[in-house]
Length: 113
Image (cartoon, rainbow, N blue to C red; front, side, top):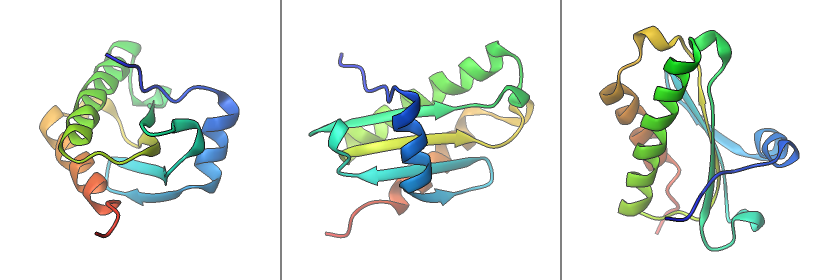
């Protein structure tokens, strides 16, 4: 299975500063469709701040979001670079709610056909 990790501080900073974004209560999705570094695929990073909880909680949220993003890409592939930012405390987060929010954000960025 190929890795789709968006790596590199400069690339992440550039994407945060120069990308479009959509937000919900707990998540913000930064995106740039057709990112050159991604080629014909997608790259994604998940940013979970330390104030969201201890490492175990933050890593659980990353695993959930990574799985959900992979499923969304299987349903409808969009090439480019993506950053998913978590905005709130992890103690209130549950997988179905985060999955629903990510799906809404993902559908909002779909290019018109």
